[in-house]
Image 1 (tube, one colour):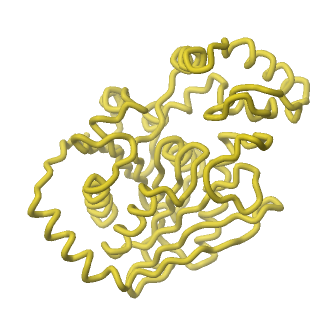
Image 2 (cartoon, rainbow, N blue to C red):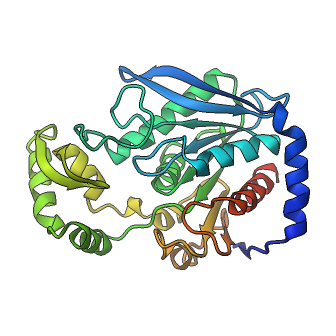
Length: 304
């Protein structure tokens, strides 16, 4: 199994910056909209010079309840295009029509973790209709977990390989501990109530004034609550990757406190298809020159 540590070389970044600046004018960016499950969904398409979606393309999935306009994601798409690789970055709908921006905690939270996996599948099919023949699935944080999950359970000849950027880790004990620490309320009581409702076929029942992911004192359906907080080892990306079926690169930030146990957990993944790369000094969001190093590694992996 491949294991690398990053070496930041100022000269190489300067040369890459020079190359990128020459091609920057050729990058084409546009938003596309289509319909999925009765909702308008949108994605940002960034095309490399002289390329179409029928060429090598990356399908990029953002992290939990965020959106494709975050600086990390915009930077990755731009750098990919300047390296000759086009990309499509959807906004997961989160059960909201034509969603843009961060999740609105004042609205009903009826989306599920599984919805994101299904939407990745929708965009894979959309790319196929555009003529795509070789897709790299790429995802960050929870989007990395959803990407890995989709790639393992819904593999296809269209999918060439997988790049996971600081993908989600999980343990049942940590989930309960973190929830109580953050919200000062035991998770188990709420989860048991939600699971009972789902089991009774009442998953659309609204749990009012509940703390849900990053939303404090919001309203969420029982089905949504169970989806994000249930005990399911597939929520742990390293566990998923033990069954990876496509070449997979996991990119880790050495200063990442969000998935602080990712490097240690990845060391237990004995799958020859899975490799990992550590970017020294980066936190969970790989901003500034860390984005350059991230994309340099991703492009090398995709083009090998």
